[in-house]
Length: 252
Image (cartoon, rainbow, N blue to C red; front, side, top):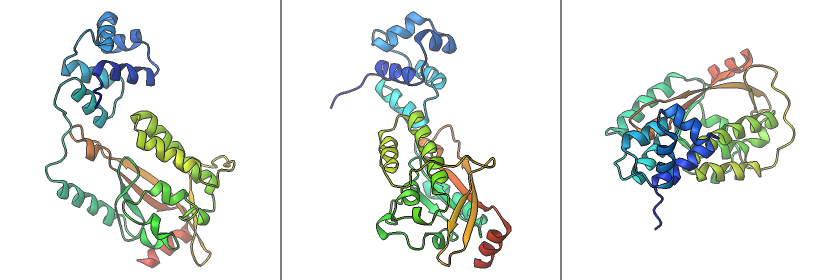
């Protein structure tokens, strides 16, 4: 297996962030000559130097660990000792949001957990899309998933794909790039209307024909010493009108 050295990896991240060597050297307060030597492998950077450059390059925690390992150092962002306890804490937050839907997602938008208000919204989705790991972007945009019931599919599609594209660019993760390419190929990619407000509404037609109007709030989980937990995010859905509020509360 070919080993990628830390210098070329750092150069790739610098180019991805569209920074010159001079710009990065200035921000990180190192000499341009030293940075050039690091990138070409003529100088072996310390762990502190790798992390300093990664900080100015806005490299995510998991990818910072890859840089450290490539440089011959141990990773810094270990998995939590009590993963069950961490997920139990999130379960409390999910349940507290009921009767409104809420999901816990990982970096790939794979479903980690959800509250009881989510399942009724998925009626009619194909079983193959509901087999773990459930990817909520795929589930939302696939023609066998929620897509036929999303009234404003064009706007919601663009909203989701923009988020996936931004994360794929930020992390350089090939799995995210593959998800983006797959979902861009689904039908329903017509021109999206311009948003009429500060949030993008999800208008979901239920089996009885009545629409649910929802908007979502995403809460990132930031933990400087754990890559896995750092990549989790809560997405909570709230009613966008009184009729939706009443229907969701009646279900409870």
